[in-house]
Image (cartoon, rainbow, N blue to C red):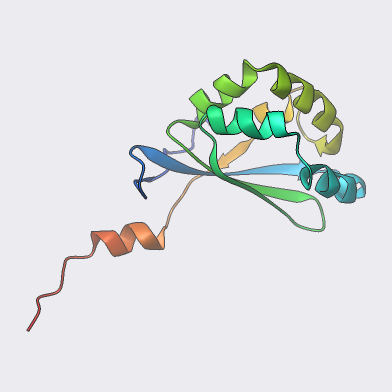
Length: 135
């Protein structure tokens, strides 16, 4: 997480101490179709590793110019990233995915996430509403 980013809001949704994270990356527009195809059939070993490392509700969204928006829920994103970094499958996956990205300055894609600050969540605010008196 960048030094200026604040911690995302906590919610429980059946789990305790889960935080929401949103991040940006830039895919090379000319490789976007291939990037989409690679993510339509992610290696089963990679999927299992992500889940075991604490990555939950993980989704990627792409704009036609290659802007990639990621969303993940984890107890702690840095810990979930470290758990993945310790796996052989992640090392292989990141090596294959590196060519798809710009602006990483020598970092692997999983190290180049620009984490965004969450400023609003409807569910959190609805849960914080005071109960209305019944008449």
